Image (cartoon, rainbow, N blue to C red):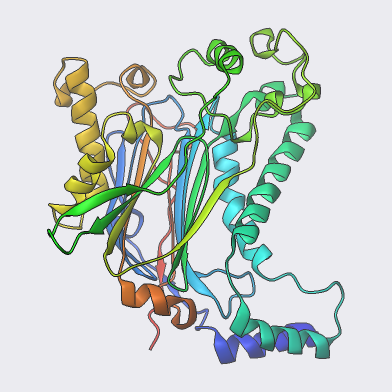
Length: 403
């Protein structure tokens, strides 16, 4: 068609070649060590990254991804890095859904042309948009809302045969680096911490960039704690958790323990994210994105010190290992003994942990929106029915080096 021909022409003129080859071998998809999966080092549009996941639940509820390359579904004009940490609760269904859909929704929201445009108007629109494509708080908010609506539609579809899906939800922490600006959006209690250099002293100080959402009202907190006795921190914002957002899902055939004693007219939980945007500075060294499983055992500054005082390669795994050592110490056992405990039982000692350390190159961060950079797509996560004491990742990594 004329439209497809125009798209092909624009991709040829402004976008990097879409031809790429997938890396093979363990270094491409990461490595496994019992319940630990890790990728010591990789490249993204603005620098390097390190990633690690350790499983505690019988089924891994944490999901995560890092995407680097085009940030528009039209694969042209806008490049950067996307990081997502999705900490599920009640099961893995919501976090897996977010992992599969959120980034695609974001790419689709960056540019939404008029319905049924003519080929001429589409060409003018696309030529103009190449220079003005941008990420914004509104684009991120719309992507999150589309993901929430998509999952609630899935709950509606499966309600009669799988009512427990209404009681499954996920925290959602995402970061986007584009045009020298860092965007952070959060629902729940995952956290991102910035390591910023203080020139006067040479220290690298921790700065928490995300706002956490825990239940504030005592009555709601008590109700939620009774529904989730194994979760020490109950969030007030999430994706999913349909049974606390729509009264039609807070009834039979949902298990009685999830049904509130009193009917509600307004949603108890919200899917509205906290969103911030800030220009990256030369002093900004790295970002630590992690689910609350890590932050239950390490302070912000402890995590920053670990990354700062060791080689970049293996940073995420090093943080996970430090958190495991802290968890073992609290229970007065050796870390080596803790690491021998099977998934499921392990949850009594610590939660699933996911960490992505993103190192920042200020020169690349400011230029990446127009020049592209390595194209990377990798996920850390578990399979549906892993064998005992193992974790298998769903991951892929592809690179394209621009000339």
